[in-house]
Length: 617
Image (cartoon, rainbow, N blue to C red; front, side):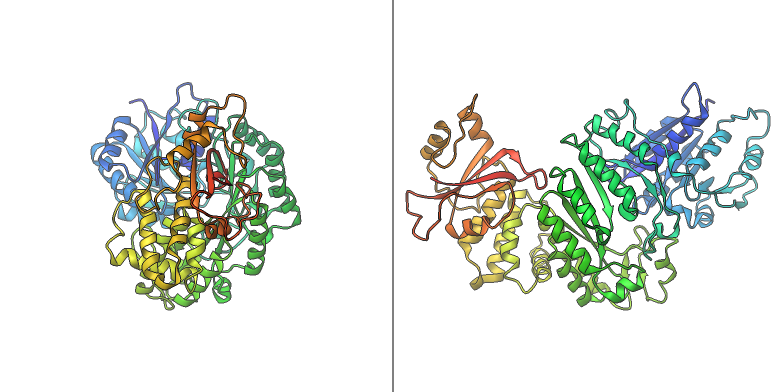
């Protein structure tokens, strides 16, 4: 039969793509020089019906199926591979990736249908295997299995099953130079299979740090791509105006010159569209970096910072040397620039971190005011130092993916469940960015940010709300009802409703008014007159080609109280324009209202919120 190899990836979401399988495919294609391409890539998600994945792979009629294995997909990969072997018994099934590299022998022992595992970095290994699989050496007259046993014996970086059932592990392979990492994107696929996807890109491999929970700490050899190569590849993204490029470098700025050269180049060649995402060590950011950041368009880059914990004993035990105070200072300065979206990461279940300690870590992180706060739970990765220390830490974790912590000597399962309640609310309310002004008000009424989100999580659980699929507007109502019940005599119901309504229309150009909002105080006649006249003495909308109906469709006017106004104008956003008059306590009468005009055609590139101008009406 015509021999074909199918590289297969099961991603978490459709918007993601698997960089590894395209790396392997491109690296081999560039060296095999075949007239007819014999290596192809198939991507699915773990949410696909596994029967559909099985059918699609069966119809590929491949000689070899090679699966990319990670903590989030190993269960589904093994399930599909097992069934695929039944219907394609003459095909070979190989695995690769971090989830099988550190226990490759056991993978083969437990799964008799697997032919072999690529251990570690895979480009050169996969290329040499492909030569064997495609019979490049023209060895067609010998027994297939015998030939492969002989050929496999000299390929470094694999564990494989021989014809007689023995399992052999070959010596490890040397790492390839960073400049040999293939650039997988081209004119055909950038607007084809990668359209509307987050594009992953790497300019370095390895990590100089030794975080005990991370596999990257095993490879201390950090390799950087030549800057002139990186420039050409960034130019490709800029030229094609891709939406987002996510750098997968483990600590992007571990080499100051490498990072700053790239940040300078991106700032100097901004196309006004593309966003670049970086994972960084915030405590390495200095004056030179701030000088570069200051020049950047809002939304040009976003930064992800791994705080993980503020407990000094925890930080030391997980082999980090970060300064919490330095990270807080850097994030504060970035916040003042008002042009960079920041994510901050915490991990629950780390050594020496008990419940109260984690609450302190959460509150400290929350008060740094990142755009997103990711509350994760420790995953005990195979091959990590954390796995070695599991006994010392009395670390109990799930036996199947994602190997998540269940308890340690410092924190119990019941306490982790309480953190889960909090995490769900942080994800739904804080990280969505849709309730910013309301949350600023109501978290201030609670003992701490953590106590607020934890109480909200308990409210969801006790009222059977956790598993309900809400329309977005109903989430606002639940938040309102919770706050009215939780804070009772402390809260101003009118102010709460004003802030919720403001947050709602800040993001939503909704034509149907939510049921929980106050009655719209602006008459339909006044509303129509405002747009017909092209504004008023405070706001002039008139311009060449002004159309009142178009303006009315792309804008919304909402009346708010003086108290709400005074809270809202403290926002330093360039997308909130204050009234140019003094708002006095006796200003509001039945015919004079403080109003905000939401302009949905002009949105903040960081938050996607509408541009807001305040006026009197």
